[in-house]
Image 1 (cartoon, rainbow, N blue to C red):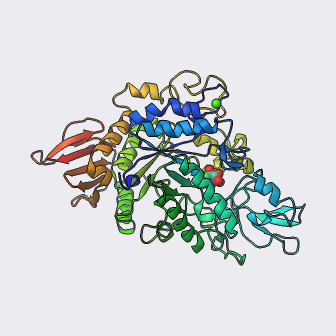
Image 2: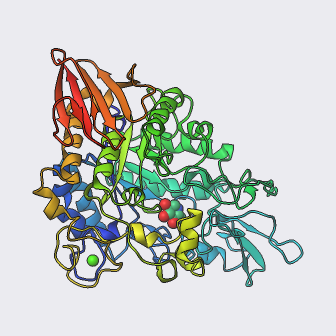
Image 3: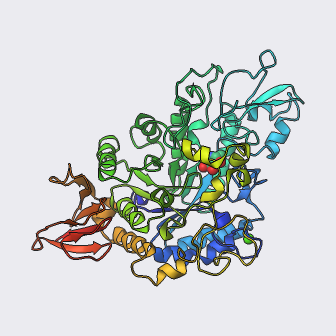
Length: 537
Ligand code: NOJ
Ligand code: CA
């Protein structure tokens, strides 16, 4: 289908935590293969897999030492090719994660580059002399420290916009760009359907190395990273060259007949996000919108998001709806683990106009893990191990990403059906209640709601491709969010009750048929946190 990515649903897999098959406690490609039918039955259309390339694993795969090899922890290149084939056989799509901004410091390029100032690969990275025994300028990385790292061997600093073992590549060197474009071609030639682009907005840094201006803002938020740690990241994030790069990468993917797509991890206001998409739909196909990460469980919060997205990202652009990922606290744990509330969030995500991005485990209401900051394996947790959990919770900063990366719970056995041995990370709480096996047979489960809505979304043109408008008469309602989706031959109304009291919704049954009700309560009653779909006759 032309522009298939405009109608798809994305499911993110953190491969370490999905399914282990060889008993080392770490998920692997054979495990992914064994669970493809689960995803197919669930109704998922596109799978995005966090990196599986060769890596020392200091940032669990986001530090890559060879982009054209699979890490032996996960399997082999042949197995990756088999995975691509098996996904396609099931009429699904597969998207790989692509980290263009930086490599691992164990990548052969960096080893060469750091070996001497005159090395032919010196210019593959961003090197600079210090100023009076200090870093070259005031640039602070995305993790809140100077991004400059001193190298005693060559007496210069290299720049990293994330962690110090992730040196940033220098895209002002045309050879670097070409090498990385070759990497993308390598995987596109093998059939991958696109890339999720890691911190794409960080790739270019100011050529003149100007200091970043002061900002009053200290802490970043999921949707605003460009002013943080008392700095406006004017010269290190969202440079105009990044918008140009988006167009170049788009031309690369457009040269493939299978229409691979790009979804960018970028942050900034809507103007910045639009810059990445390109004025003529000639940039990244999609960008993640992180405004739901800090959602408020209120009808007007979601109503405003819809209205804003219709204004800023009208068709043919597609908003994206993201409640969580491998860097953020799980959404269900933000509503106290309440499955009914999680159902309503999913109801919104799967019926609004836009691309839903589901994080593995969301569909079974998997809770956050409980590993304290000081015990985290995550390098961000290790860097902040002195920060007590009560303090990070109070400040609303998420430091130990182990907790959103716990193993998928498939059943209620001691190792949750994930592994036969010791898992690399501990399990989330309540695995006996919240698992695939139990929820599959419970018609009222969260898992069944996902499955039902994903299939309806696929079959109803208005849900996967129609327009959206807020329903008159409900625009000021405190608890009810109501909207309508319309496409040729398909018209559906959506009612979501964010309140904790039941509400009567009188609709004209000569004109509308109830298509789905999440609690299956009385016809004209919407229970607390219940959602309902009506189809125009
Ligand atoms: C963003 C990724 O989502 C995160 O997990 C990773 O640690 C950094 N980029 C560095 O690649
Ligand atoms: Ca394994």
